[in-house]
Length: 446
Figure (cartoon, rainbow, N blue to C red):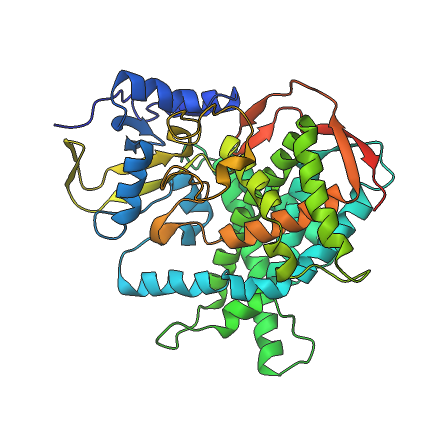
């Protein structure tokens, strides 16, 4: 017996309903309504031109994460594969698995720790340039600007703001077409995004070629960034990525690093404005760290590891407004789940909303409560903003460092209040405040 559900319209299925509810700010309604109507464990639908099975709850999450590369493999919608070809490289063969492991080494804590000082400098520069001496700021576009400039600096040492601005123009076009119906016709957002991606990859490939020359000639000023780490790291067989492969993966990393960080920072600022007692506790923790350091010394890993309450606040913000709604998989064989048959080739979706706002796992789910993450924290497989299993987002460590460094700098320099008290959250395709989160600033004495 196949899972019950509704396949919607021919070709487009229920895609429009899925996207519409997100733009209305109630993306969880798509999941919850169907869980109530069909099954709390699994239901069938059609999204992005594909037959889609949605696995729900911690049991579904555990099943998917525990059966990577045996029953399921990673999959992304056709629009993403057309824009970022390497995103479709989800093969279960040994070579592809080794390649993913190689890329993941660039985002391990031991690799990223050396960039904490650069992150601190970047946060200070951003706040000085865009927040200081301002009565009001619009947080979401500034967070996107910050997230993008930071990934450019840390991944490729692209510090020229004029060049980065040109780069971002194409990047913005790419982002607009990422989650769309995969029809590549002139004038569509997908067609424009593919063109922008091609321009970006050629631009990055030139940076890669120059960097390889500098490394080969042992130029003393070769930047120690993510790109250099990727160029100097081989797989177990001594194989290296070629220029265009690296360029394509850098584009994918730019998207992942930019989106997660900008969304998370925006909602942390939102909740700190709404909850003065939470803001005060975060500020106390960060001021204690600031007082313990010699004046002018940059943050380091020891400081980050002391930001326990601040990280609980960030995690609670990502529970209520997860940077990603969910992730996709593909069945690589026929199998049975919860008494239903899943066919080889069917696509599978799991959503953060099937657990993040479920009162069975998070009592009073709409209440902002960082204490949920104290002690042992949430039950396994209920809190999944970065996914899980072999395809867990490799940028989770990067996101943690960037978010905490920004929190440290912003709460030790500013206090703020929301201008629109009832501003809605919408999903398009990532969570964002409907009006961009304008806030009124009150500089703080440190």
